[in-house]
Length: 526
Image (cartoon, rainbow, N blue to C red; front, side, top):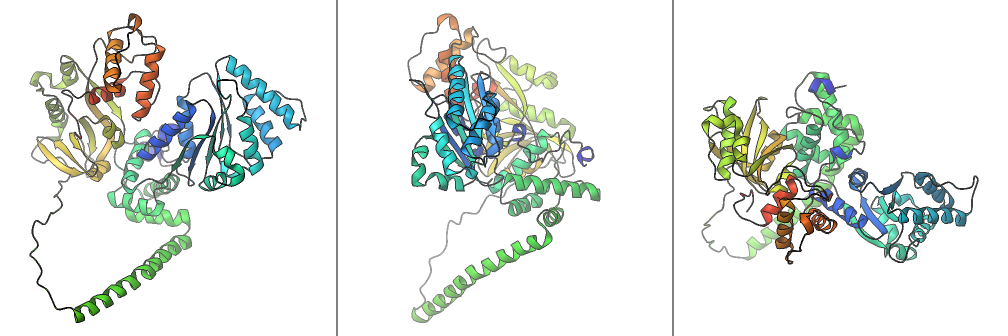
């Protein structure tokens, strides 16, 4: 309803598990890494737990998008089944034909075993994903364990991924399920987003949906965290309702008051008020006795102790006074792109030639650098760790560019126009539209993404870089071919550094390789 009003290409806060909208917080990156590790192992169980709405299903769908084509996958979303029903559903999901009306567990397992053996002979991997797995009965869980007994002399034939709420962990810790628990080769518990991640999460989803300006005020984001507790699904529901409220009132941004009204409509006014009353009562019950105790103790102490001279307080460390992220009035905002490229090239020890300012990326190529233009989050910039030009939206809706030169956990330094400003990361999150441009050093003879089987000097460069980073002798390459062994090493490197382990040598992989070897690469956080 409000999509056209805000100029969005899609509805940004749908609760459907669309991997394109997955915001990769540190937790989500670790969760995906655990799933990938489990998937790349030789079988058994992989466990991902988390509270309702934290993103378990989305993470799993993201995993399924990255697995090889020669993988057969079954996805069970309603696990309240008997053993016989479970085996029938597994057959249905994999397309395994079985006798009509069959109720024999042995016959089901024989057909499943034949299917798995045939898939293995063809070089295919078979994965079973079960969502809401906390609803599985002990009998069904035991049958799943027995299915993982289907194996060859080298590997197990079936990989099982269990997604569930926290009570699944408690269920698997029961003595009667200890054999299953021992077969879990990777496990991770996904929590809610931290306060500082909520703003980046909202910005990420709006950016993917095609937003052109900031739709939430800073106070509204703070309130959003308090109302949602950092749970992504609640964030989505609240944001969706708040944007509808902005549209209905003809406003431009979600304010704190609009968000509170949206919360009343989502949660129900009575429940919303009750929650806050309970919070206030709890605070009073827990803090007032403490305060009274402290006052009484201080009074007693003052009566029984003579006053002692206190040393003078020196070297008081005051928090830094941070600048506001805005365009300076003494510079034309139309020149912000030029100023930004000047600052970016300067980080690499280069000077922007006046006659080439519209072609800064072309100038960079003459020095062995390329521009990378993309959309992302501060997590990505933390990961890449090199200076970048950011596309920002001012408080009045004006668009300008600035160069990020230092990025820490809470603060950053940004070159705005001709001045460097120390600003809060939160300020960047509230103004950044997600677009960024950075420079990266290209390997010899690099023209585009390097795929398995590629031949050329860039493969020798890659082999040498990995050998230095991993600390082993340089392995000889026949005809400079990007072979299976080197692909395997690259995938390990990508997985260890939070990248998609696809074995494809693209800009992000090369950037991280360059960063690890030092040299003249400028870093955001040295």
